[in-house]
View (cartoon, rainbow, N blue to C red):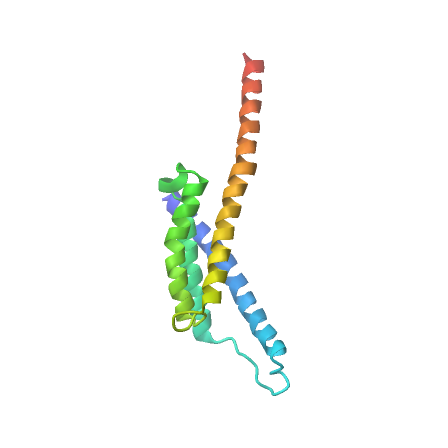
Length: 156
């Protein structure tokens, strides 16, 4: 029971963080569009709509559920970071694409530039995570192992 409670706490924290940031980014994007298109002179202001907030909430809820499943469940804990990240991407990206269509970020079949931008972001995040795992975390694991061996040799 305690594990389920922890998973719900992780889910709540991830949902609160991602939703607040996406709503803030959405509002800032609306303000940027307003000033870049000079619509503030005509009195036309883009509004934050309730249906878009609901869509953002559902998007963040799915992302948070995928995040908690991939990184915090006992089933995934022993598999390693890259495996967890791959599971997260496999679960999240198809729904992310559908949500982009539902939120009308991609309209129709989508522009090639949007798809390229989306793909570049996903691939660069994945490569950055792999590089961090290979260069930083394995180095720390090596240092930890050396310190543990040193401690055990002093102890015996």
